[in-house]
Image (cartoon, rainbow, N blue to C red):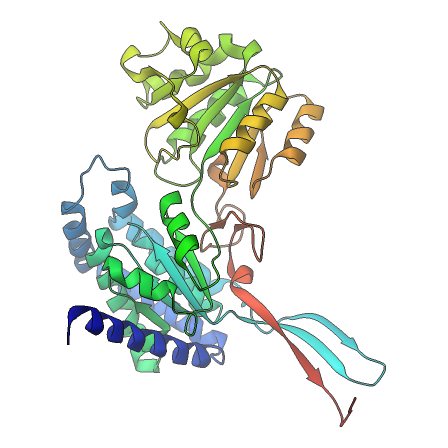
Length: 422
């Protein structure tokens, strides 16, 4: 048997097991799901040395200067946070078997619209082993099986995590409920064509990954992840608020999808631009690509080795590193036009004190989350009070914004009668 045929059969076996497990999960009591998540949290803490050793092997293959390095990294603090997140998901109310709507027809038929699992979720993701934990927890709590297609960058970490998960599932006859697909690139194409086995594909990663999945998948796709994020500093903006918000949006964690990529500044406020970016230059050593007007305003006030003229490719770029671009505009219309052209429809923000300007921005911008006078770093399921998320959906069908437990369900109609015929 050649390698391609062996891979195909291996994937078919895993997908078949996931589909079978999804039928069992649909009947799983929420108390059992809670017990599994608490057991996994405990095993994660007990097995930290083995998980960190596996992660170290992955990290050794990656350049520390790669923006994905921080996403790949696990340490004791992150593993403790993951264990806490598992327990937090366990404590959330079940999204299943909720009566969403009910009515009785004139013929006596009783109709109920009830929340149910989607079935089998396929998750395609890059260099983020924490996603393996997150997806499993949310999928289990919402009654879904999951097929995980991680990248080769995180192969050893994902394998160790999936093995740990299986120690919790196998004794309960649920091994297929979380299946880690081979990390080879060829496996992705097979999974994207598996519409008999997988109900929805959710890509988490770069715009390139999302575009590839969308172009090649026969399975319905829910787009999440890529964030080309803007903050507009209006003529009416408060400088002190702006300094805090811009620094936090860019520097809190540069490798995440809600980090600031482009600052748009009103031409009347170019004099405040050095103060607005001072912390990014002095404290965070952020490289800035500025248009001619912003470049002139920053010269002599920003570290020269970090200041460069902007080119077209610096707009519409998700940097995922300590880099950002600056664009000068003459009015709100120009800011809205820039965002409409370059946004990935993830998170967009305005800094303004004029209420009419603010409200117009919030109405006009087409994005999953829009902010007024706050950092885009808050685009996160936990920060929204959802407990956790499977990703930030940037599309408009089924779900938009942080996808928490309710967004991992569908519904069915249950009809009860007493012999009615039509």
